Image (cartoon, rainbow, N blue to C red; front, side, top):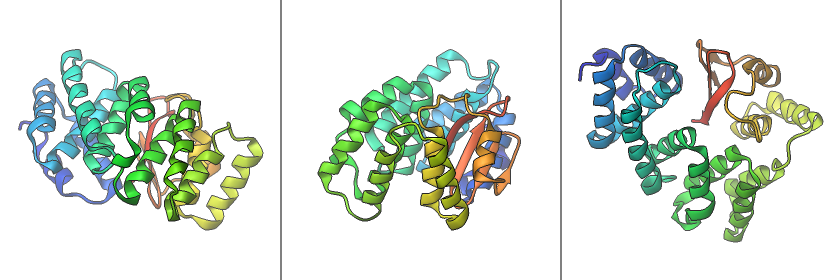
Length: 253
């Protein structure tokens, strides 16, 4: 595979989320047409680790301007990630990452699948339900809200119940007062749930590319780490920005 071999090999082995982002960007910077073709092939035929890494690299490449990701290859890749998302979301890391890619490629189709076609009983274990809640919250629509309310029929307990209530609590666009209260909670507790509630409320109903990163920093405070186009907040939030420093993607690691 003629892409930056050292960075690719290190990316496959790295476990630190922020270092993964740095290595991913290093790989993206060196990609040519044949490299992109090889990565699409890795998505289809690679090992689980190679597939997961390749989807992440191609997600970032798809966000970049220019013609390094030709339309024909992008269509092939979209077919692959859509298949992975339908087969594996939310029960494997590859399924979750593939659903995030699908959401960026075709937000309407991804939302329709999750709201209308996804059987809630397919979410195995607590982690699966939490991923479903997180994605529905990210869509932020009334349709997503109806699916969240349907999840209450499962009589969830523990963290799932807490996150479901939190998601339902932010169906309406947050007021400045609510954002301020969530910001105070985050700064006092510095926990994952507090961070999730604040950032999700801020992004409620906002389209990619509409929220300046400075607006995020004003509420959340300085990030733990920052690259040119990626910010990381401990314990587990990764934010991607475009060349205009506006939020185009995020995930909770």
